[in-house]
Length: 372
Image 1 (cartoon, rainbow, N blue to C red):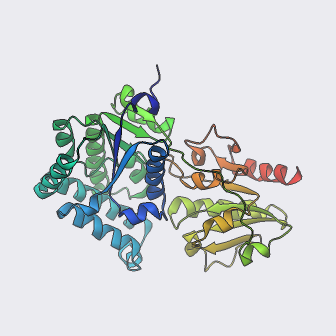
Image 2 (spheres, one colour):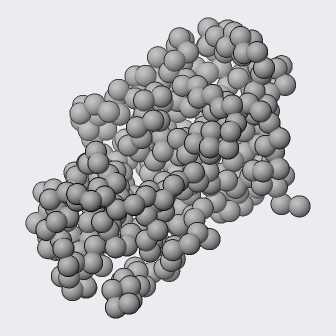
Image 3 (cartoon, rainbow, N blue to C red):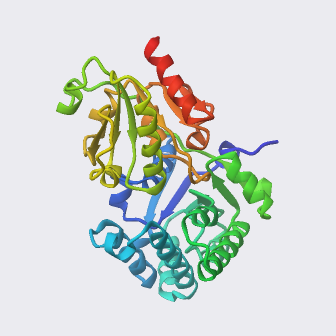
C-alpha cells in the first residue's frame, strides 16, 4: 500500500523546525520560507497543536551561524561577496557543511533542545525538520524522547548544488561530502518528505528506503477574490490578456524570464506578460525587452497584482528537483496555469494546471486561452 501523509498523522502535537527567523516564515519572500508556512497552515487548519521552532532562537553557536547567514542573504553586500552565481552556490555549499559540522559539536545547542523538549507537558508525536543538513546529533536526542522525525527535502540538495557549482576538483570534493552527509541523515530519519515523485525515485536509487519516503505537498491555500482597486500598472493594461509570472532574483527564475521574453516576441502585443518580483534586478539594464513584457520589481501587495492576471506561467527549464512555491500563489486565483513539467512538480494533478513539453507549446497554449 502506498503510504501518504494521512497514514502517519495519528498524532496530537506536531513540531516544525526550520533555520530561518519566524518573521521570515510569516512574511515569506522566498520559496523555502513559503513551503514551511504551508506546512504550518496545513496542520493548524486541521486542528493540530502545532509548534514552530526557529533554530535561530535557540542560543548557541549554531543559531549564531544561522543568523549571520540570514543577514548576509538579506543585505546589499552579499552581491559583492558572491560576485557570480557559481561562487554564490559554492559559498552556500561551504556554509551547509559548516552548519553540519557545528551541529555535531555544539553541546550548548543540544542542552537547550533537551530542556525545550522536557518543558513541554506532552512531547510531540512528530517533528518535521526542514532540510537534511544541520540535524547532527539531534536525531539521537529525538530517539531518546521517542519522537519520530521527518526530514523535509525542499530539493534533493546535492543534486541542486551539482547544477550550480563549478566542475573543479575542490567543488566536486565538497559536493561528494555533502551528498554523503545528506543521504546518511535521510537514512536515519523515520520519514522523508519530498515534493515530487522524481525526487522520491532518486532517493530510492541512492539507498533511502522507499517505505520511509512520502511525497507531500502541504497545500493549504484558500481561494482569493479579485481586489476592487488594482495598482496603476494594471489599470494601464485594461483590455489586454495578462499572463503573470512571480519570481525572486534566483537563477532558475532568471532563465524562466528569458523563456518568457522568447515567447512574448512571438505573440501579439495584446498579450502582456507581467513579471512580478525581484527577478527584475537581472533585467533592468537590458534594452532588448519587448514592450509586452512588463516588470514590477518587488511588490508588497502581491494579491493586487496576481488577482488581475488572466493566466499564470511557469516556464522553468533548469533545476529538476524540489517544488516551485510560486505555484501555491497561482492556485489561489482559480486561473489557468501553464507550466513546463519540471515547473509543475508536485502540482501535476491540480485543476487548471496545463503542462507543456516545450516553450513552443506554452506559446500555443496561451494563444488557445486568448481565443476562447
